[in-house]
Length: 292
Image 1: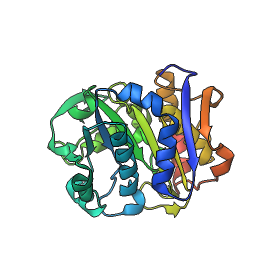
Image 2: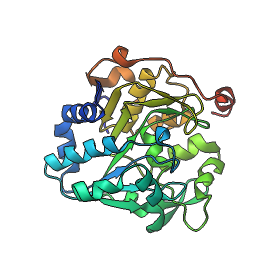
Image 3: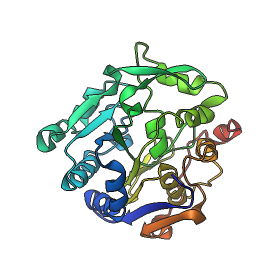
Image 4: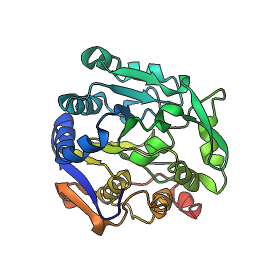
């Protein structure tokens, strides 16, 4: 992504699906250009398998599927690597009906081939997410976090690309790798990166996220072909200082997206239309001490 050329769609409204469709249509031409000839891979966020308030909503997935099918894309899959039972999560959150309704395939990345990748420690990364024939859509919700302050579109892919493998705690290697979790996540960005970010902020989470925080009815969506720019705009919507999430700054220094708000064109609503102050996780001061 060339710096200074980033467009971020920001929509506020009272209907989750309509919000997402409006946002995606604002950047439709770019999406069609970048996704042409590829399989659309939608990566939701199922950080847990039994707590809807912490996970991607099925209506958000429906909106993304309908957008791409209307454009003529026929190969669409939904793939996730939950820390728990991924297929149980698909069932619990109503995703099983998407296969029948839209003909999309549901994939447990934990049961697929992986490739050992050195990000300070060796971790198994889903080969499907490394395959450039896939157009990767990060479909997540904005949440505060217990280790990196905030989890948005990039962390959904960069942490979510690590599969459980033969050892159930392989995702924890991301936290234990050399120089800590922020630099580890940024290293992963050199291997796996979303092609499209969709941050479904119809509801968001503040406080003790990513699982046990409080739900906010924020009623916005952010979409961009530049995931870093999408996350940067979302920080503003959450009133989080841009110098706080260190992993985003490290990714910016790699030249993988735009982080300077003055170089980001915001389409649709204005940040002030949706902005509110989010409460951090109760241990946020400790997180800040570990950043650099």
